[in-house]
Image (cartoon, rainbow, N blue to C red; front, side):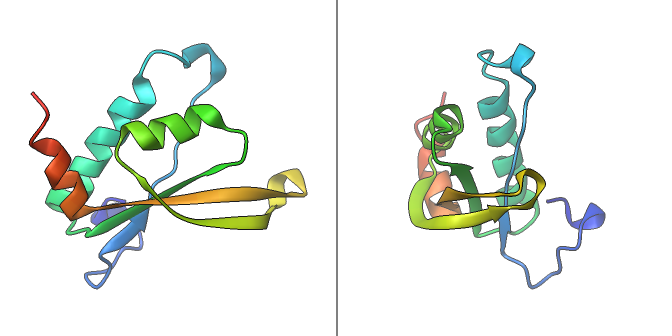
Length: 109
């Protein structure tokens, strides 16, 4: 996500955000807080106009994080390969535009 540490080019104005957190740390609000900071950096410093994020069917915690951070449904991909698990799953892909992110900032204290 950070231009000097990834393969983002000056033409890139969209990126994907992913996250993972070990079970012992669940329920402490760490991921929403981290996602908010990454979104701020992406929109304010990296010139992103849209950030994508997704979750696998049944992962209600990840779904909630994305809803809480303002992501909106974009599409559903059925039978998406998960090579590490050698299986296929349904993926819910969400998006957040810079415009929508900026509108949410007005309501934050």
